[in-house]
Amino acid sequence: MKSSAVRILLVFLLLPAGAFAANNVVNMSHYDLMRPDFVGMASEGIVGVIHEATYPRRERDARYYERQRAALEAGLLWGAYHFGDATNPIGQADHFLDAVAAARPPIRPDDPEKRRAGVLLVLDFEKNGHYPGGTMSVAQAVAFVERIKERTGKYPGLYCSEYRLRQMLYAPGATSAHRQTLGNCWLWIANYHAEPRNTAPWRTWRMWQYCGDGKCNLRPRSLFPKSVANVRKAERNIFRGSNATLQAFWRENAWYPSG
Image (tube, rainbow, N blue to C red; front, side, top):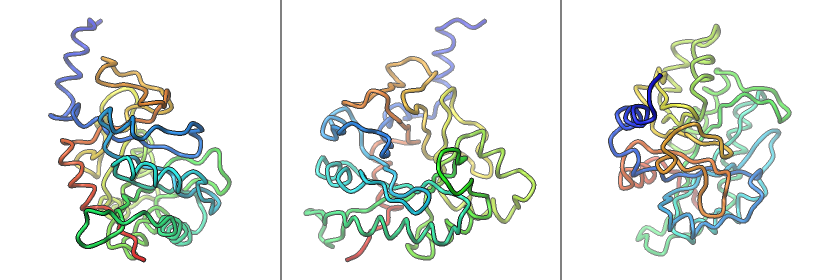
């Protein structure tokens, strides 16, 4: 049995340098029923919000637009994710991008190029147990991200739990070509118990969701909070790197809808 002090020391040793300074991304969806205090989030060090934009079957998150504007007005970066299913992946990708573009984020007043605010795109590659349409396969995920790349010039992030990532990408039917294509995406991985280790074919994770719906078994709590502003049961994430690195990463990988 290890003492609490030893466990805390191991947490410090295992996490990447600078990770704690970058505990600064929150993800949300229409299941979060409160009116989020984005100004409060920013004051607590949150840098970006990634919100569900679309989900099965071809639905748009009704809270996406209002929250996007409020978060951007609070000075936060914005991202959007699509919850995948087993239907036509090209149609899903097109629906996702059309929904994101239709929200028409405001043009930043400090942008000399007068571009609309960038949106970081993500495919939520989870097991689908609560929406119609079944669970997206690895081949369908490949088709989805390739379509996003074709239309935006950028590969999206791929969100998955550590266990499911290993289960799906190395199961029968998943090929090295599939893994190579998905490896072009940046990895956003979930583990509420420990820092993710099994990230192949990626060398490491870019963002780690350590807390979901207030569920988190990591200590000390001061380094792994479960709430933010007025969201008591939050979904919080650690970015691998500093706040400045995160902002540079977001600008580089975001999609800037035109029009």
